[in-house]
Image (tube, rainbow, N blue to C red; front, side, top):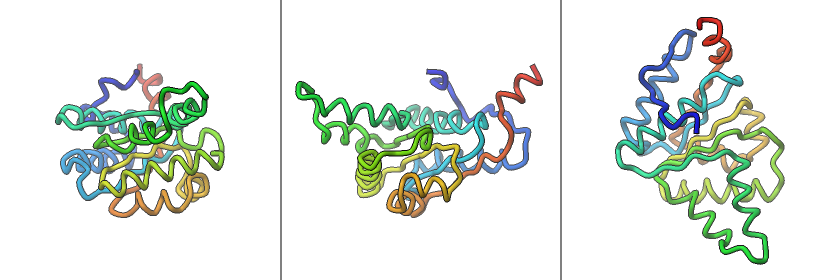
Length: 181
């Protein structure tokens, strides 16, 4: 995976707002997500959201905490695989995979419109984690109103309870890195 070694330091800070996002991410790690229902990492394509989400996850893992990263499509693929008659796994077992880690990072929300069953699964995951007081990070290119429309108010409300929205509103870091290379 590209971000297996992602870290919050050093992190290229060259646009307004990046230092605030980086400081919020570092604070999240310092408190190990305690008392924080979740983070929303929202913004432009290539702005560093996945890097920051994975860097937070890596910091958790370095603290010998448990964590999981997946894209939205990967998560739902696991649920769909349980629908096969010969599936060795149940939906409940898949749900546990997402509800038990001390940190869950779900990326690429909004790449496609969620089907009703996908919304149900995401809601079950977020409620399961919220009830256990475990933080969740959702990453999307959507703004907050569109994300709320996509995943539902139940999900957003729970993660906002003690959570934070970090907006990555600068141009792609990929473009910036290519320009300076």
